[in-house]
Image (cartoon, rainbow, N blue to C red; front, top):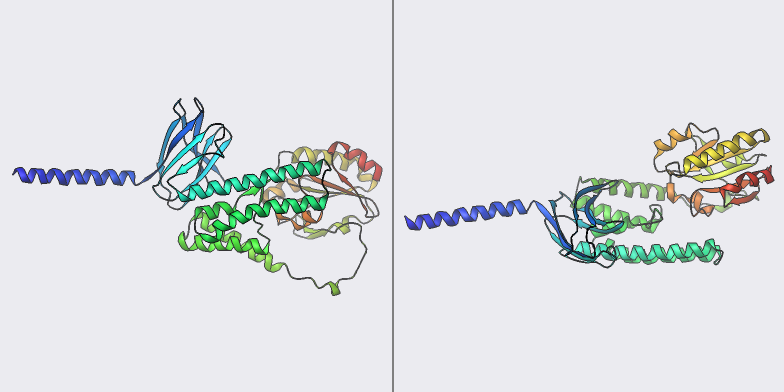
Length: 385
């Protein structure tokens, strides 16, 4: 009888351990130490495809220890630790335990992480992206100060971007099914993706990761997102047919023509607008904070100078077509939209490096001015009119 009781105790203890294990296996753990962060708030956030959600938070104490537990995701998902405006990105795909050691002052760059190879890879990718951003920012300042020429600026920016992509490709092509590959694919500089959806070589990277995600995580939100982007990329690239220069009638032009769809879906050429009329050409994005005030200023000038034949040809680079349409319907001038958005080849031909970009054509169709300061726009137009 005593032997039976002992056996029953062992069985019950084993069941308890199994149940406890089952409970633990439903969560992942993020813990560690942040030195120098006493009384500061540390947040655990989920980084979705288009949203960021706060999951938990803790006020750090003098030792700096923290610990978060959260239900594991069904598929690989992205999270981040946020301390003030500093971020540590990482991914989770099971019940792993991630251990971070960081300092509050250099939280986003000098941390150490154990427990996840993907988290280590994401750190390397983040540092490469940060290096590229810093280099491009430095180059932009030199360019704006007229310290370097256009061609040198462009080549150096491409070099900085390529340095990042060289690091990113190692993760993308070595393990395209990994969270690190996905993360590397979507890093940005100035709001633009390093990997261009409309570049033939970069398209291969999207296809590689999309194919792997379709295979390993079928039906997941990120797989669907990647799949759609890869298809869009292939479609655009296939549409970029070689041009037979022998079939093109040679004409001397004073500006690069633009042909894009308006609100009715009809293709509108800039040359059809600039036919004996002074025209303001504006590359813009209605979803930005400065857009309403810019359009208000343009409205004043449009009303003031329309009797003298003044016209506006406004090119939107908005990604949200419905938002663009809602704003454009209220504007009295010609509004078109480039579906390539921030990857616009037209904007690239006009050497648009930031928005808004404004150009002025005179009555003869000569591109006479690139407006650098909106405050001088009225005076610039008067000189043309």
